[in-house]
Length: 89
Image 1 (tube, rainbow, N blue to C red):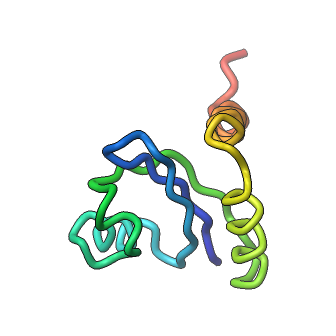
Image 2: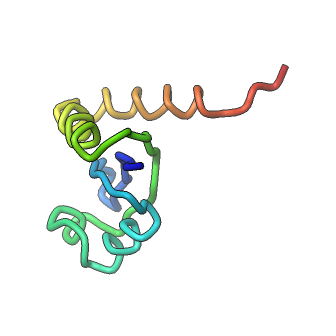
């Protein structure tokens, strides 16, 4: 199973990527071994993940998220967190 993830970078920007191991990939980003973008904008903290059935699905979702504005990404992340949080009824 693949995951698309969103990271909050030190400068307030949001980086989106995909991987099969989110924690390993986050460590790579923060160790300067990830994407060029996070090398110059890190360190990063994990904001959100989305599960995908295949690498091709993950790539498509990553592409769609990267096209969003910063504000749209924040709304998507917040809505995802609300849906994932346990019900308190």
